[in-house]
Image (tube, rainbow, N blue to C red; front, side):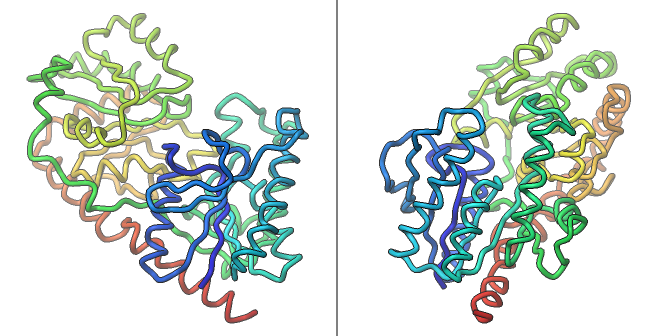
Length: 400
């Protein structure tokens, strides 16, 4: 079976998007699927048309003359992909074009697939217009927002089959008119072999950040507004009143970093918070080992209610204890009191109360750690998740 994947960007860039893409390709190879890989002109870092990265061959799409122009830059992405896809279809002769978000990739793939009689799968990974709203680059209900959503709906209906990363997105796609039998959920997952529960905290990092003897709360990820880190910081003085040895470890970075540092200073909690910054991917597990309780205080917005994050799964895979806001994206993974704790979103008081309660109950905390690890092993491994694509591909190619 010959499948040509179309991505926004890929390794060697590091992002949640590229890690999911790489896991899909790895597992599809194990299933005996032959894969080829094309990135749009939005991928950056190389001028080469073909690039070998970690035993994967990626075809690249060059930017066109309109790439830097407003609006026309989006047309340039689609036009460049269509041209590159036609070239590769002549060379590779794929049976399936599997386009991954955003919808610009799908628009190009749908056109080429129709012209050449090839099956077309679209993988919707997020509500990109709602993500733009959360990042402040778009307003809900604006012309740009509505056009983006209409384009999404268009390509979803043109696809022979739709893949989503969670049930929340699948429900939305169904509400937009795609039949349930044409939708498959391939959840975000982890490779348990890469996440070994630590037997002790990393001694060098404890010493480096002066964390010996501290009870460590942790967040590892991107600092977007919707992640709710400002809510966590507002809750921290309440937590410190009950747990004076508490220390918050923030690993990552993003657009909210300056505002968060200013908030820490205004609250006078500098001695209880460490901003680590972004760390190399190979060091992430060392930082996971330091954390006694992982906090994911995402705000309740449309994006977070329908899309599941990856980081809580990684924490559970590490045998970590997880507390998260009670929103749709978290409820798909966390059962309150079983494999984690859920607290009311947007409430510093509820967050603080949950943290203190869970730290006061080490017995139930240990049980939740084990349940979290078991949940990932049984329901959120990449191998099991990606295997659901095989019958989809088989049905599509058999019906040609």
